[in-house]
Amino acid sequence: MQGSKFFIAGRKAGSILLIFLYISTITLLIQLKSGQFILMEAMQHFMAGFFLVFSFFKLLNLKGFAESYVMYDVVAKKFPFWAYSYAFVEVGLGISYLLNYNPLITNTCTFIVMSVSILGVLQSVFDNKKIQCACLGAVFNLPMSTVTIIEDALMIVMSGYMILNLF
Image (tube, rainbow, N blue to C red; front, side, top):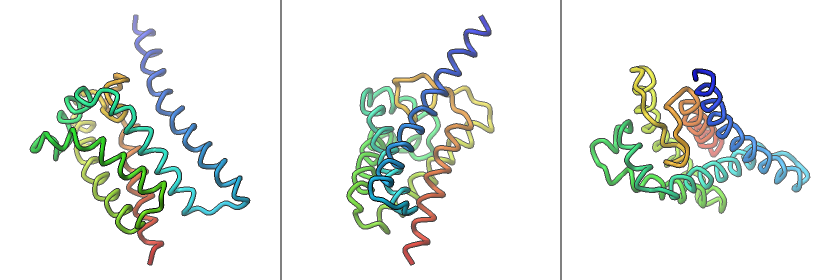
């Protein structure tokens, strides 16, 4: 029985890795098509894909996502409407990155949203709370883990790097 739990957990973590691989491959193919690799453009395309794909899973069951998210997000705990709004914020960020809409505003919003988001994730992981990660909505029953921290941290680092390169 223990082995089957490990297999299922591995499949779920594999799903996240597959999504990252998928988004990364699309990003690289876009760069190859242009004939050159431009890091800022690649990060912009990766972030567009990340936010659009992850928001899609949240929107499949918005109520289930919100119920999971409010369990650990510091803002959603105080203002539950934020749990419902978050998926739409991700859609907006994804579209903004895709359209290259005002990079300073888009990256600043991403930096702030993801920095606040990681606080609740870190607190839950360090407190060893057994909470379902809401990163893929309620579609996958993923436990909160270091994968969630890596996802949030990656978006924070990339948006911060892009902000610094605007000046």
